[in-house]
Length: 447
Image (cartoon, rainbow, N blue to C red; front, side):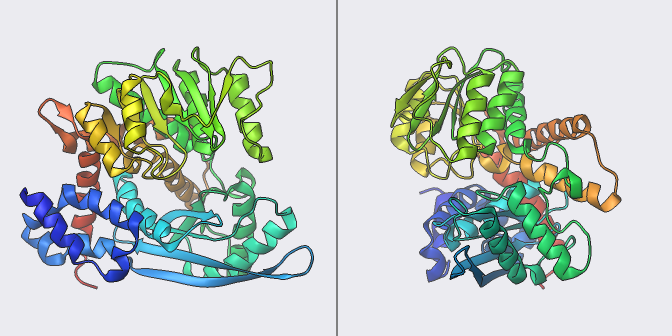
């Protein structure tokens, strides 16, 4: 057993029993610790400050009930959370997700990852995450509004433009952000940037909706350029049909890539010659309407493959954009067998530890979500700046700033991860994020 592995195991054993029982959090901690633990132990100040242990333990976890009435007048009760992980480099920043299956485990691991992701942007943003076990699907607009207002009544005392700035995430889009921001503004009696992802009519930023998907493609382009390749005619397998998947697909087409798949839980929409804009628009419409992909119109060239994963088809690049742990060892083997040489994560932690071993053994270039999908939070940071200065950028200005930010993130990660003629992007992302956090944490002392 090498030193890093031994130290990582000791570190994991030191975690509380509660943390030991959170599998997603443990997975995220293990992946980071394996890369940074020896760096911490080799720096006397960082080791004495116990930087990694302080990052694992969030500053606070806010848990609350959300009581609201449905359209029938019946009282409903949900559970809400906000995990404020670290504000060492800026106000807490991270999304809110509404889903019946959301758990504190999900939010703890996402908040931990968010600290590293936000550090990589170079912007003054701390890490946080939150949400509720509320399902907006099937609810009326009035019910969603009442829930969002009730949720914000509980959350409002804990957020603000210089304190904690939530954004959207799964099932939290422009509608939900609007209702929550309105409730916060009314409760606080102020108008300030306490949330991002706002509409353009009340302080939002251009390109915020597209940012994560666009940024993912910009990061992949930087990876390819370093390897002497470009995106033109590359076959790209994308999983998911949500915001990240759709905008990654659209940007890939604009950059002359060939998107061969989009998917949902029912199966995969596939076109070996590349999905055209009409097919992508149809998938987006199905998502908005709450439908699946099982019955594409005859006017589309694409075919639907029931129960198939995107990794079952020949591709050069894989972009998992659906959910965590969607690529297991079998999926990784299929991906390799079908010719994939680059994988970049659009979702958060969609690749299991076993799958990573398969990818590394096969020499697949792998970019973790904390680097590759940082475009959303990067433009959120730009939105915060625009709101503060009351000067708003054009779509072209934001898009160019996003491209530059993603290129800079790539270069930071590549510089940390290079060795032996290749780049370990996962290690590079963990190290670059950790070093920035460690410097800030130690500089501010023990609080």
